Image (cartoon, rainbow, N blue to C red; front, side):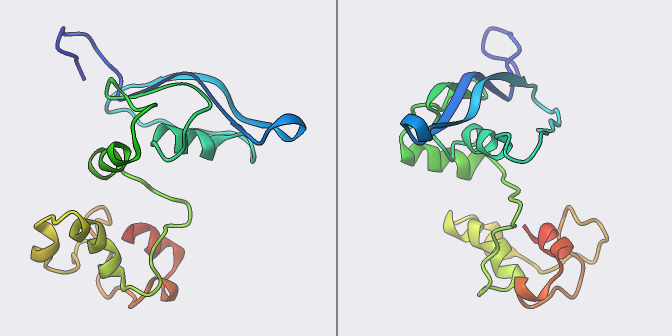
Length: 162
């Protein structure tokens, strides 16, 4: 992605990012001075042992948590000090999430879980949904004959429904 001056800018970057929890003797530094640049169109893996701050870093970069220090830029826009409404709009419009636990509502069908975010923002796709794809391409929709609820489905099926 280029800025108005023909310069390349990354999809996401952090500068000296820090996140601490607690205070005094109980203070824990989960993210310590992380600076990175993720190029537009690239896949990036965040790897490390359990408890190393991966999830905290991801939450910071997505605007789900506030850093103790440092800056976060998404597409060149500084999101570090955005108010909650602007962050909500940003997350809804520009960020896709894949959570470990899938975060599906157990009282809704799989189809209702998929359509809910679209309905919340009055996206016309929600009212024109034609059902499940018969394609084996799970990127478009889960396979035919979906379970009636997330609780009755496999973790693999739930991952395709998100």
